[in-house]
Amino acid sequence: MSKKGLGFVLSAIMIAMLALTGCGGSKATGESKSVESSETSGESKSEEAKSEESKDSSKLIVVGYAQVGAESDWRTANTESFKTTFVPENGYKLIFNDAQQKQENQIKAIRDFIQQEVDYIVLAPVVETGWDTVLQEAKDAGIPVILSDRMIKTSDDSLYTALVCGNFVKEGETAGHWLEDYLKLKGRNHDESINIVTLQGTIGASAQVGRTDGFGNILSQHPNWKMLAKQTGEFTQSKGQEVMESFLKQFDNIDVVVAENDNMAFGAIDAIKAAGKTCGPNGDITVISFDAVKAAFDAMIAGDLNVSVECNPLHGPRVAEIIQKLEKGETVDKIQYVDETYFDTSMDLEKIKAERAY
Ligand code: GYE
Image (cartoon, rainbow, N blue to C red):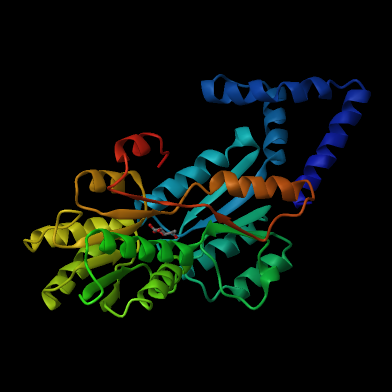
């Protein structure tokens, strides 16, 4: 049980004792909701209400989230998912930190969380390596760490309690299989060279490593697929555009661009158009990307993007479920991959987009 969990039990016992001695404690527990609503209505509170409120906030499970940054639409949806899940009404207090894509900032945030004695630390690790020291510090402080979105490389799996993320190698393989099918459909045979460039994510991020490796697994089965160049676009639209501009200057024979997220694909599409070329199902260059955020559906509907391999950012409720189980002393699966699919222009995209949350 977490320290706050223990505090909850202790304060429950105290409330029960007050009720037995006739001090009105049991009535107060029932009033906690109205205390919250008087807070939002801005009415002045009685001393009793104020003291109930502080009891209430001491019951909240405190979660520190070391977020990567705000580099993409996916990331925005992920942040939103945490901010709407870990709210007082659900029994949580969230301490949110945006590390601006820098590992040193995430390490500092984790140390701050330890100092603040949070109940749980959630980490979306910007890169895979370099976490052992700080996670050992969290372990020594008795604070469980839940990895969300990306994985880490460590020789000591006890440094984290659970991991929930997309299966990035599988996503990369899905992209490769999609290209196999697409080329077949287009009647492009095995003798023809298929020239590919890749806009990679943040180098060393598990989302980058997995997608690059997964696509590479399929590419290695096709001697006619040529990887002309791979370079990072840092998962951002502006960097994606910049790198694609330089690829287009270096190579005049690009058939396919693999962008390791949607935002880099949007940048690549702008660069392709600025270079006087066309892309998408009816264009010169086939564009493959990952995430499948709403703007990717728009780009497919507009005929600029061919396919987006899904990566679901809504990890807030999944992490909350893990925390609830841990609070009850139940065991949780160490690694949880989210089921994912892909979307391309052969589908009814308007309909699918309307049903999606991000
Ligand atoms: O694909 C990208 C984001 O880690 C899965 O990070 C995530 C990736 C996502 O910036 O858009």
